[in-house]
Every structure is written in structure tokens, then in C-alpha cells.
Length: 521
Image (tube, rainbow, N blue to C red; front, side):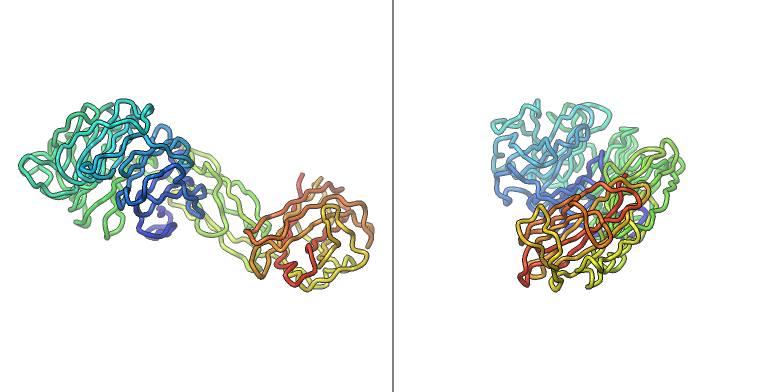
């Protein structure tokens, strides 16, 4: 993943041989990545974590092309398409898939490209042997639907592209040299894929006999075509009648993907090459580029939390924000046009040292620092020497395996066992607070699951306590971390005790115990 703000630096967000990818246009933090033979995963946080989304696809992975395609409906990005020897559709962002074709005959190969019309939602699929398949109504297609097949020529089709202006007009490209007279590398259909005509041009203004990997139609001028080829980018200003190689200083290498960006003032064409990086050029007649201003991120507390940051730009300037690796998550939808705001969330920092967090917004890099958790004294195992919370929000950490318990320690109502290995805190409710929220977790040192922890809160009457105000627990297990929460009412200016205890006295009970407190209105 790359951004203008990061310049030439790109962040690796998934391993393996990268294959098809997609970004939800409504939410730039919902992304799809795949590895060979259509191993598809989805992220809802800009690539920090991923979930496999293949439920329902029953054909073997070997049926899919090594770089299998992924199609997204631009009118309804919840709808996705994929194909191996069978064509598949998901209507819920990949959570479930259903077949919408019979199995392709062996001579038709496997699906190599998918196109969805932004005008009417019609769908075409192409194959590794040069076939292009269509059906009159994709929405009604089932596992029994036999798609109509047409083959303009023999060869591998890496890309199909619908004209974004004219219904029924679509282009297909072949990544092979010509093997017979009359063959072309670029074909156009004006009847939804029923018939095809080569549009390589002729003579000195033709596409030379080289593989073509991608064709792009300008959404504002469908006479303007861009082709990614074995020798860089070719451009046609007359819908394919004549072609010229881009004269900009650009590597003469295979160009496998092209993207137009017309949302940030000046119009730019991006070219993604095989082995020579990513290039960008400003298109002729383009306007001035947009400028963006964004408020700084505050210094973040160890407790974490949610923060809003203003974005300032002109009314016609689009923007999108994505998180950098680190402590910050950018809440969706993190995009807009004109002035707006983004919301970011910082998770609790349980480490004793500060950590960096930040985000990218267009050409801006915004960074911040999140404080580390505070150490809790060993002596805090007694109410008389409770750890004083002097500022909110607060986050503290203590290894409780060697903590003790006193006979006067109360038995929390939500616990079936007597208190064990207690840690005590004392906090005074701030003037503007009606409640205090406690978050807590205890990690085992043997299996790194949950060590079992009970948290309770009481009014403080000197060294005595009043009636229990809250009680919550996280059970002991070997699974992933689970955060517990408890909320209790407070009177501003009054003091309260919070106690965390283990669920047993064994050496593996207790552990890396984290407790945070913040005021609520």
C-alpha cells in the first residue's frame, strides 16, 4: 500500500505472491487482497488485520488461475465476482459466495478477467484461452446457467474494461504476440460482448505487435483510451483508430495496471509496471491540484480513546485517510469531499514505553505519540498502600503472580472464589464526571491467554470501603486476550477503591495485569 504522503515508500500489508486486489470506493479502509489461486482475504482497518472470505466456494484452488481475478460492482461494492472453472458471486463483501454458472468446458480454460459495467451492472468474464463469456441477466444467473461464449482470437485475456459512458461498449486485451493474420491485441464490442472488432489501428499509428495488459477508458471522454503494454503506455484520442506511445520519460517495461485520479483537482494517470515501480503523470489541460490542511493529532494517553481531527480543503477536493502501521486506527468512512473531519481510535498501550501512531491523508503525514502504561508498585497489594491514580485517563500494569491477599479484602459478588493476589488502586472522581469506566485484562505467562481476573469498585471511607459499586470478570483460558469492562457511578470529589484479583493461588494464576480508568460524563 502506498500514498502520496509516503512518497516512494510502500508498506507491505500481505505476504505471498500478490494477486488481485480491490478497495471499496465507499470506505478506503475496506480492502481485499489475494494470493495465488484466489486465496482471498478482507480487511476493514486498512490492512492491519485480515479475514479469509471464501465461504461457499467449493471448487478446488487448482481450478483458479495463478493470478485469479476479482470483480467489484462499482454501483454496489458489496457485490463481488470471482471465477475458476465456475463463476462465483458474493452479495455481502465475500462473507458468502454462490455459483452463477455451470463449469466451463476444458477448452475454455479458467477465468482470467472480470468486468462489471458502471452503467448498467452487466458482467463479462474472460478466460485464459481467449474466450469472453456473457449472460443476458447476471442477477438471475445460477449454478445451472450456461454463459454464452465468444472468442475474438486465441490467447490470454488479462483485462476487460467497460466504457463508463456508453452502455454495451466494452474492450478486451490480449497479452500475446499475434500468431495469425488479422489478429489484434485490443478488441472492442458495442453490443455487450456478442461481436468484437480489433482496434489496434493501422500503419505507423497502430499498436505494435506486443502484448497488451490493460486498457483504460477516460470516464469524461470515452474517445480517450490508455493501454498498458510490454513497452509502457500507449494513448489513443480517437477510440482506437490511431495510437501513440506516451513520450514522457518512462520505463519501456510491461505496464500491468493503469489508474486515473480525477478527484484531487489536477488529473493524473498512474502506471504500475512489472519490476520498475509505479509512475505518475499529470494529464494535459489538467487543473490545479488540491491543497489540504489537517489538524494535528493530540498526544494520546496510554488508555487510548477516540479523537476527531478536522480536514480543510476546497469544496470539490476529495480526500481519504488511511492508518500508518502502529497505534492508530482510522474509523470508517475515512473519506469525503471538501471540508470534513476524520475520527481515529487508539487502542490501549500496555507497554511501558511510548509508541508512535499516525495516518496519511492525501499528501499529508500526520503523526502522534501515545504514552506508555504506568508501573504499579508491589506494595499496592494492600488497601492501605493502594496505588494512587493522580490523572485520568489512566493505564497501569502489574505482574500479579507474587501479589498477596489480606483477611480484610472483600469477596467480590461476581466471583465464586475467595480473593487472590490482589492489587489496589485509589482514585478521586473529577469535577465533571458522573461515572468512571474501568477496562482490564490479565495475560498468562505460560500460554499467553487469559490468566483470570476479577475487578470490583467500592466507595472509600478512609481505609474502609462502602458497598460494592461494580464487579466484572474475565475467565482464565488459553485463548486470545479479552478485555473486561466495568462502569460505576461516582460523586465528583469523592474517593473510590478499585481492586483486581486473580481467580486462584496457583503459580500460573495472575499475570500481566492491565487496568485502565477514565471518567465518563
